[in-house]
Amino acid sequence: VSLAHGRVRTLQRMDDVTLRDVTPDNLSAVLGLEVSPAQAGFVASNAKSIAEAHFEPKAWFRAIYAGDQPVGFVMLYDDPDGPQYFLWRLMIAHEHQGKGYGRRALELLVEYVRTRPHAAELLVSYHEGDGEPSGFYRTFGFQDTGQRLEGEVVLRLPLPDVSALADGSGALPTAD
Image (cartoon, rainbow, N blue to C red; front, side, top):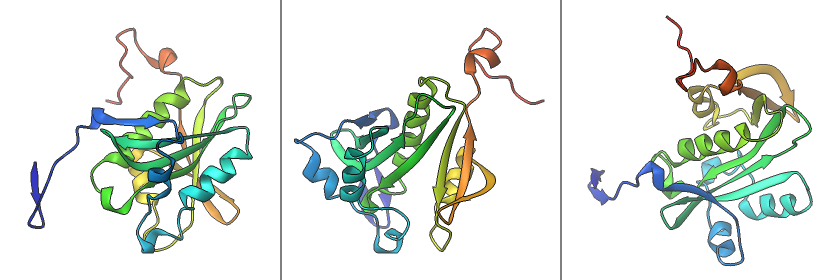
């Protein structure tokens, strides 16, 4: 429990953050999740995302849960025939932002992408402007590609083959 701005709030353990299928049982709750009005221009609604996913065979989408509560949505362009995977959508509802759920969901997504055939990098794009998510992605390790896609800045997260980099201990080498 923490006291923030005079309100008591319960902190969620990050291992309680999960990615779950969107089903008839949770669809209404997922559709009801929204970002703040100031962020609405940066991410499509979950309704639009789910509709698009149903017409794209390579779309992989999940609800982001903190415990038993849906708090966000993630969608990936999952093409096992190529080395690039694309984070198509990531949203955390405005009332759940700042709690680490987005970062943990991204960690889970990267873990999933690492299991996919030929995965060498995860791409994401964003609209530039006040409130853009570039800082979030850059602190996670995404790098600028110098490219634009439909007017959006494209970032990449290299996904090295962990087994090839590990020294047998399961740890990645560090720079000294």
